[in-house]
Image (cartoon, rainbow, N blue to C red; front, side):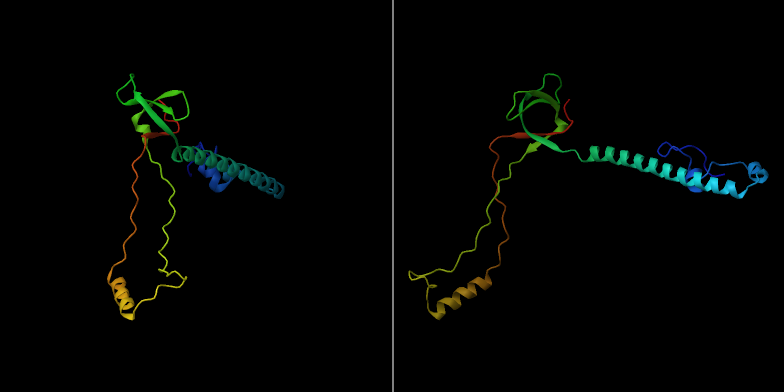
Length: 179
């Protein structure tokens, strides 16, 4: 016989999931007489049971997925300011939100630096130089040829990151990380 132990997530045995009926012994199978009315009733019960079992399994999967989602999708909150080291343990700190007065004790594993990322406008390319009339500056053909050669010979510069030191040290607190 196939595995007949009841599974916690479905509430039925794997045998019932695969064969859609309660497992019977060989003796029961040999001695049982089946009539057409019994077959119809059995098929109807089978349809109901299968739909109930699959609905239970789906609900169990949804609950498990929600638990996993809560654990792995933790969001960081903040910014917080570190007020002082905790007097409780050497690895904890007293933190406070920037706009609040409530202080909390948090283990250092739940802290990370807060980085302010200012929005920068993209740099525009320099338009061609113009003379006073509004037309591009006129020059000799030699000037334009030498300028174009210089432009071709210089490799393009890769964009550089603008580094701005933080004004204050802020801390982000992991949701649920209060000690």
